Length: 362
Length: 143
Image (cartoon, rainbow over all chains, first blue to last red; front, side):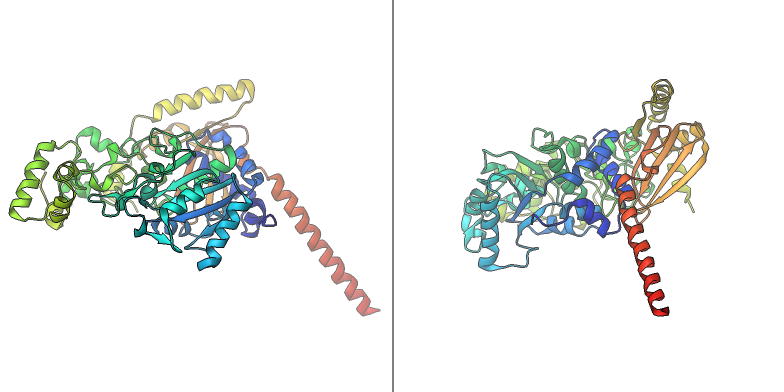
């Protein structure tokens, strides 16, 4: 591990000049909302930072977060930043399996006790720990054991940060976030379903260069979760003018007007989707014509239906829900209603959104 | 080819062009008086195509354009207002990564980086050694 090359050498091996690296650092500074004059300092710090040992634990998750971070187009510098850490345990990516894999985790913990970074994706079943085990060890035990020697914990993805989809009503496994279990370590929440790759690498880069980033009240780095999507949305001028798409195939939708009335959660969702974008800066959901689901916010899955406008009065939801239950129709209903009904009833009445809802007139 | 819709969108602005132009004016005065450069991140404020249009119109095109080809292209161009540069970074697919206004006598990214020069020196030495060896071999072959 000590003999592994530093980032500068890695870049050169990939045919990336220092100018190319400076360019990346300028983009990183922009994404992290740091003053652009900092770019050369970031480059210098990253080139000379010691490679920290990283243990990555995957619990109740879909591996989408790992997919996102490893699937950026190569040769990307996100990839290289990822190489700047020493990833000592990651059960999806490592070659070792079974006892050998667990041994690697124990070795890394012993060697770097108190210094390693623990990355977690996925939620932890607290009510029924046996629902999710790795090598016979419950997620709960593995998290507690590994967190004890960690310098800091990065909860990657909405599942680790807030419980995510496993936590969604009726939460059959009793899934909770990392921060619900670990109370005595610095925890950085990097929510998103999945988070944008450069946000994940940006947080790692920030940790390598300047230590813990500044966090908001939900422990999210302010640099990436400081503004709402709505604040920076290219459709914002239409919102300001009161021009809204009313359905997915009307004139407004074709003209690219604001998707607020189609349930866009941009105004209450903090993320850099609108500026950093997805798939190597190609686009983001609103640019593709779909409202934001609000995936970086707690309980986004239960937040009143993806296609319900934010300002629609709660009374309407209640009526809709009752009508839906009565008629047995398939309608997306608000969690406020579901929560009141209790878990078993909610499970029995589990309702989905179908094409008719998408066609609805607001 | 721009569609009629894109044409219309290119006039939609946020009203942020004029404040940015004032900021550029302030930065240029600082550069002239103290030599201190300023970098303005165009990604840090809401900025739409219409704002871009105003910025381009006021700053105009200068006498120097450079293209950097590393991790995709970067376009570095002095605007018609000397000392005010546009530095736009694109990825390998031509998508915008980040955009800056640099108010400076020389954008940092145009300079040869010391690390690249040091690496180039080592590479050049290698090539010269190879040539010397080849020459020595050829000579020993003749003798």
